[in-house]
Length: 151
Image (cartoon, rainbow, N blue to C red; front, side, top):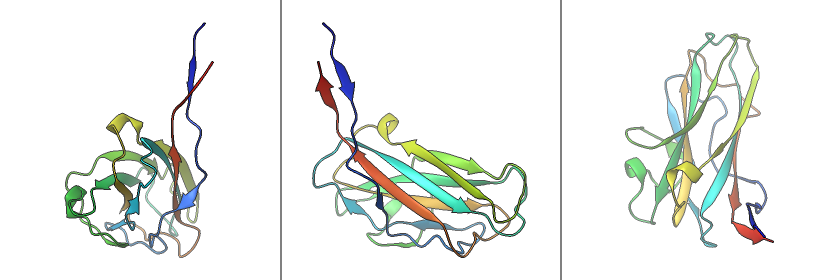
């Protein structure tokens, strides 16, 4: 008889990250989170509201940050701050499909393709549009997952 691996989550938790009014052409990193339960992977949920008139086809990007408490991806800090991207893995992007102002864009992204999550993790968002994000309603959340084998 075969067995099935399921990936139940611990529940959605918000990162500490200032995304409201994030300027175009800028990036912001979250406060790093300690993976005290040593979960191997996480799902990220990014929900952004565009500015008044973004150019259709421009994007928002989500990057995975990892660390060990001292050394971190792209020398990221430990707290919510401006961020300069160099080599962080791209988890995914959201596209402004029609240039509508104050539109919501949301999706989930899985860290599994990038290997084990590690002892500390976070995220960074880059606004590659021509408009600041809306002043409200922007969130980045995570849900830690652990594999369980079911008969």
